[in-house]
Length: 134
Image 1 (cartoon, rainbow, N blue to C red):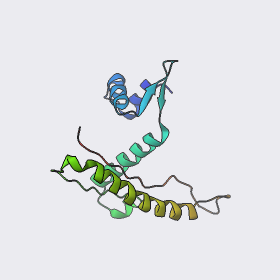
Image 2 (cartoon, helix red, strand yellow):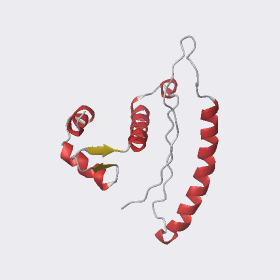
Image 3 (spheres, rainbow, N blue to C red):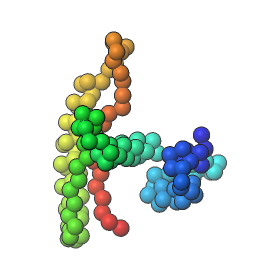
Image 4 (cartoon, helix red, strand yellow):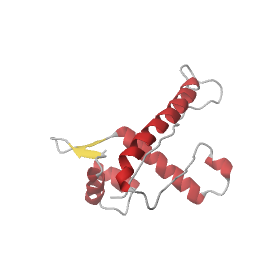
Protein backbone atom coordinates (compact mmCIF):
# COMPACT_ATOMS: atom_id res chain seq x y z
CA UNK A 1 0.00 0.00 0.00
CA UNK A 2 1.36 3.42 -0.90
CA UNK A 3 1.59 6.25 1.60
CA UNK A 4 -0.94 8.23 -0.44
CA UNK A 5 -3.49 5.41 -0.39
CA UNK A 6 -2.94 4.94 3.35
CA UNK A 7 -3.67 8.64 3.94
CA UNK A 8 -6.74 8.51 1.67
CA UNK A 9 -8.06 5.54 3.64
CA UNK A 10 -7.39 7.04 7.10
CA UNK A 11 -7.91 10.74 6.37
CA UNK A 12 -9.94 11.07 3.17
CA UNK A 13 -10.11 14.89 3.29
CA UNK A 14 -6.40 15.50 3.93
CA UNK A 15 -3.55 16.00 1.48
CA UNK A 16 -0.94 13.20 1.66
CA UNK A 17 1.90 15.72 1.25
CA UNK A 18 0.69 17.76 4.21
CA UNK A 19 0.33 14.63 6.35
CA UNK A 20 3.85 13.54 5.35
CA UNK A 21 5.28 16.94 6.36
CA UNK A 22 3.67 16.79 9.82
CA UNK A 23 4.72 13.17 10.44
CA UNK A 24 8.26 13.90 9.17
CA UNK A 25 8.59 16.98 11.38
CA UNK A 26 7.85 14.79 14.41
CA UNK A 27 10.19 11.98 13.27
CA UNK A 28 7.35 9.50 12.83
CA UNK A 29 8.17 8.81 9.19
CA UNK A 30 11.23 9.22 7.03
CA UNK A 31 12.05 8.87 3.38
CA UNK A 32 14.56 6.22 2.37
CA UNK A 33 16.67 6.35 -0.83
CA UNK A 34 14.14 4.41 -2.91
CA UNK A 35 11.70 7.33 -2.29
CA UNK A 36 9.57 5.07 -0.10
CA UNK A 37 8.31 6.21 3.26
CA UNK A 38 9.34 4.14 6.26
CA UNK A 39 6.79 4.16 9.06
CA UNK A 40 7.75 3.48 12.63
CA UNK A 41 5.35 0.70 13.64
CA UNK A 42 5.33 1.21 17.41
CA UNK A 43 4.74 4.92 17.03
CA UNK A 44 1.82 4.34 14.71
CA UNK A 45 0.37 1.66 17.01
CA UNK A 46 0.58 4.10 19.92
CA UNK A 47 -1.04 6.87 17.90
CA UNK A 48 -3.81 4.53 16.80
CA UNK A 49 -4.44 3.57 20.42
CA UNK A 50 -4.55 7.21 21.52
CA UNK A 51 -6.94 8.13 18.71
CA UNK A 52 -9.20 5.12 19.34
CA UNK A 53 -9.35 5.91 23.06
CA UNK A 54 -10.08 9.60 22.51
CA UNK A 55 -12.77 8.72 19.96
CA UNK A 56 -14.39 6.25 22.36
CA UNK A 57 -14.37 8.80 25.17
CA UNK A 58 -15.98 11.44 22.95
CA UNK A 59 -18.62 9.23 21.34
CA UNK A 60 -19.56 6.47 23.81
CA UNK A 61 -21.86 7.00 26.75
CA UNK A 62 -21.83 3.39 27.96
CA UNK A 63 -18.67 2.73 29.97
CA UNK A 64 -18.99 -1.02 29.29
CA UNK A 65 -18.17 -0.27 25.63
CA UNK A 66 -14.95 1.46 26.69
CA UNK A 67 -13.30 -1.47 28.48
CA UNK A 68 -9.54 -1.30 28.10
CA UNK A 69 -9.55 2.36 27.09
CA UNK A 70 -8.31 4.79 29.72
CA UNK A 71 -7.47 8.40 29.04
CA UNK A 72 -6.08 10.58 31.78
CA UNK A 73 -4.05 13.75 31.42
CA UNK A 74 -2.21 16.04 33.79
CA UNK A 75 -1.00 19.45 32.67
CA UNK A 76 0.84 22.34 34.26
CA UNK A 77 -0.21 25.44 32.34
CA UNK A 78 2.45 27.67 33.88
CA UNK A 79 5.39 25.29 34.34
CA UNK A 80 8.80 26.79 35.15
CA UNK A 81 10.73 25.57 32.10
CA UNK A 82 14.04 25.97 33.94
CA UNK A 83 12.97 22.78 35.78
CA UNK A 84 12.28 20.67 32.67
CA UNK A 85 15.36 18.48 33.20
CA UNK A 86 14.25 17.81 36.78
CA UNK A 87 10.77 16.87 35.59
CA UNK A 88 12.20 14.68 32.82
CA UNK A 89 14.23 12.67 35.35
CA UNK A 90 11.22 12.34 37.68
CA UNK A 91 8.89 11.28 34.85
CA UNK A 92 11.30 8.66 33.52
CA UNK A 93 11.76 7.09 36.98
CA UNK A 94 8.08 6.97 37.85
CA UNK A 95 6.94 5.88 34.37
CA UNK A 96 9.50 3.08 34.25
CA UNK A 97 8.17 1.60 37.50
CA UNK A 98 4.53 1.80 36.43
CA UNK A 99 5.15 0.36 32.96
CA UNK A 100 7.23 -2.50 34.39
CA UNK A 101 4.23 -3.51 36.53
CA UNK A 102 1.85 -3.37 33.56
CA UNK A 103 4.27 -5.27 31.35
CA UNK A 104 4.57 -8.08 33.90
CA UNK A 105 0.78 -8.22 34.39
CA UNK A 106 0.10 -8.37 30.65
CA UNK A 107 2.85 -10.94 29.97
CA UNK A 108 1.36 -13.30 32.57
CA UNK A 109 -1.91 -13.25 30.65
CA UNK A 110 -0.62 -13.66 27.10
CA UNK A 111 -1.77 -16.71 25.17
CA UNK A 112 1.20 -18.77 24.02
CA UNK A 113 -0.64 -21.80 22.68
CA UNK A 114 -3.80 -22.43 20.71
CA UNK A 115 -6.93 -20.45 21.54
CA UNK A 116 -9.61 -22.45 23.31
CA UNK A 117 -13.36 -22.23 22.76
CA UNK A 118 -14.60 -18.83 21.67
CA UNK A 119 -11.44 -17.06 22.84
CA UNK A 120 -10.01 -14.12 20.95
CA UNK A 121 -6.50 -12.70 20.78
CA UNK A 122 -6.01 -8.95 20.66
CA UNK A 123 -3.41 -6.24 20.93
CA UNK A 124 -3.65 -4.49 24.34
CA UNK A 125 -1.29 -2.16 26.09
CA UNK A 126 -0.70 1.06 27.93
CA UNK A 127 1.54 3.90 26.91
CA UNK A 128 2.67 7.10 28.54
CA UNK A 129 4.07 10.11 26.81
CA UNK A 130 5.31 13.41 28.06
CA UNK A 131 4.99 16.59 26.07
CA UNK A 132 5.87 20.24 26.12
CA UNK A 133 4.54 23.01 23.93
CA UNK A 134 6.85 24.07 21.12
